[in-house]
Image 1 (spheres, rainbow, N blue to C red):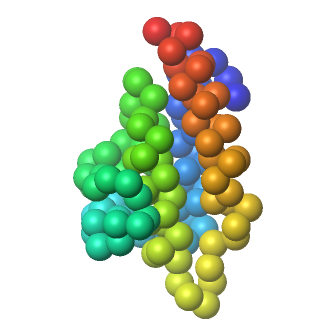
Image 2 (image 1 turned 60 degrees about the vertical axis):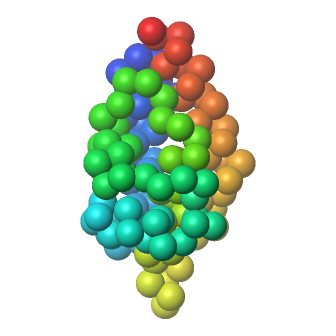
Length: 109
């Protein structure tokens, strides 16, 4: 992962890859899906937060619970006939990406 401004852009690009894989549901649809399925995420995530995560419009690292909620929302939005690849939403992979993001963004502050 790159440092500085590129760090959050790469993280967002990975999130968008998952988002595209499930048919690019709107931020509002993801917000509703997360709200309807408490098991998807540990907390509610607003549509503006979903949008900011997908676009990389954050300076501080996003909360891990928000990341997992968006990933879970994407999984729930995938058409049953075309579920998202498990490798795209692997929890350990995303936890490592998030840790790297947190470390690099804090170092850049």
